Image 1 (cartoon, rainbow, N blue to C red):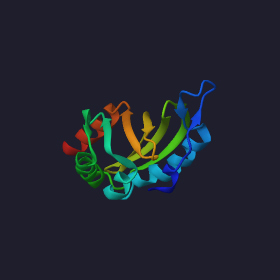
Image 2: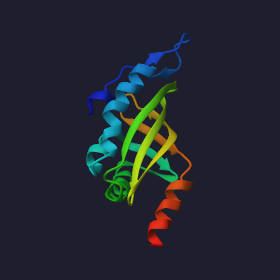
Image 3: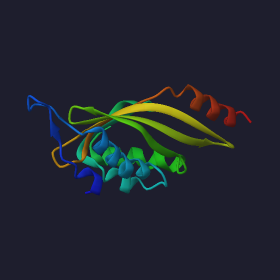
Image 4: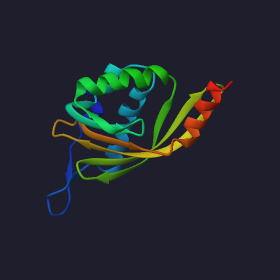
Length: 150
């Protein structure tokens, strides 16, 4: 298990909601977000539970289960080996955190800086069980289309 995934959940005053503090979310992101770079889908998938659910704007209905998730990560990371993700802010959320992020995505000779959010919910073992990614990808799609039209 990735070191950062071994976080301890905190409980709110009523003892019902588990979450990562902003500091713990930052520590988790310091381990997890670099796994999105360098085209190593197995390393990235190791942060996810076997029954994880994942979606992003490219697959709006999502994928469930590590087998399908790994297949998607293989395709996604292969075409984006040099993108770099970093956390702007981690906000406590039930069973995890809301991750506000900045992605630097090379497209041709340009590097786009895109801000988005995703929520990350962990299982009791500290693996990501649900990860939904949201951002406006209109600039990214326009830049990609411009490359294809050259």
